[in-house]
Every structure is written in structure tokens, then in C-alpha cells.
Image (cartoon, rainbow, N blue to C red):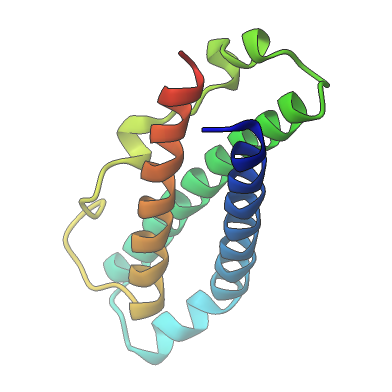
Length: 133
């Protein structure tokens, strides 16, 4: 991938991640009310919270990784330093797990956020593997 293509790709992925983070924030601020409207059980409400944390973990990891890549692009840190484990994606066991924390019903909006954040995390994970060589 050329440097220009790489810059454009990182920038567009950053915008996508940022927009998804904002969507998640907006959804999470009203999630409890939506769960109560659906008359979810207390265990289903707990499931919503657990899965909201999974979305948050994915998005936090993605945003941190993308910010490191932007720092590399602006020569704030070297490509070599960016390959250190502290700058790599982590929490793969939590972030890549597609199974719900436990059995239960979740809000459709949360299901969509789970799916979209997983797909974005998987894409960034592939980039992390490629860029860290």
C-alpha cells in the first residue's frame, strides 16, 4: 500500500471509528430506558451492560491504535516504536469473541453496534498485523 493510500485509509478508518464511537455514546446514554421499555429482566439488563462494555473496549482499542498510526504519519513516533506491544491492539480474547456474555435478549441497536464494532475491530486487527511487520 502506498504512503498516500495508507494515509487516506487510516484517515477514513479513523473517521468511521470516531462516528461509530459517537453513535455508541448516544445509544448508551438511552440504553437503560430502552431496556426498561422492552420489559427486559434484570439478567437481560445486565447482559446489555456487559455487551455495551465489549463495544466500548473494541472502540477504545481501535481509536488508540489509529491515533498511534496518525502519530507515525506525522513523525511524532517512529514506525519501529509503534510496533512495540504497548501500541498494538490488545484484548483480542474479549474483542474478537462473537458470543454474548451469557444467554439473554439484547436491544436491536446494541446488536447492530456489536456487529459493526466487531467488523471494524477485525479490519483494524488485520492492519495491525500488516503494519507491525
